[in-house]
Amino acid sequence: MYSQWIPLLVSWSNGTINMIFIKKLNFRLIGVHLLATLFLLLGAERFSLLCNLDLIETYRKYGSLEYLDHLSDTGRTAGEIFTYLFYADFFATLLALIISFIISLKICQRRQIYWLNSLFVLIIGILLNRFDFLAFAGIKTLTEAFGNLFISYGLKYVLIINGLLLMSIGVGIYFNNWTMKFIQKQHQ
Image 1 (cartoon, rainbow, N blue to C red):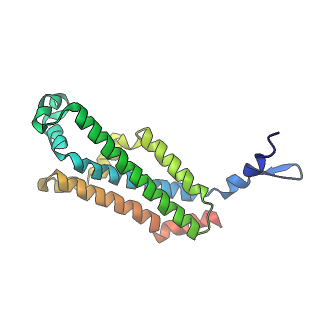
Image 2 (tube, rainbow, N blue to C red):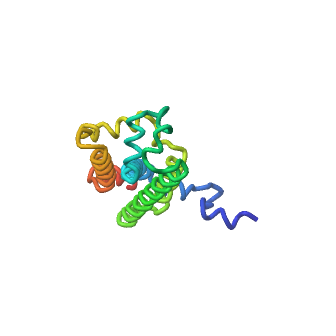
Image 3 (cartoon, helix red, strand yellow):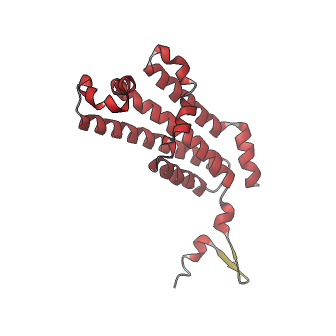
């Protein structure tokens, strides 16, 4: 009854099961591309914050406890702010995930590696973003350290520098010769 689905995952030969599907997965590729995807997501998040600089500056000025009292300084309601921040972050991360998936898929096609590796990277990236893996304080502090050197120029420049740096690291991971060789070692 279920034998029509089994060839998708396994093949039968002489009573043994060969896991063709598992053998085609390149765990090095998944790990490296997932790391690059996380950097792209962090960079996209920084760029999405550029849409609401006045809100972020109000938050930095008054802190989390007094922030809501000074919300009227921005001229927006709490509902507008939440909606705008949610959609800006949502579309920025969606765009970063799509770009990451396309780059990963093109690399897999060029290197003749199984395309489902890229799909796994996309699914894991979505799950990590959905469960706010990127929101841990340690990751935020580490990724914002370089941009904070330029805080005297203003918050806008800090976000731009951090976003560009994180996205450059992500793209660099995808196209670095060392990572390509590292991925190819498992593929052979």
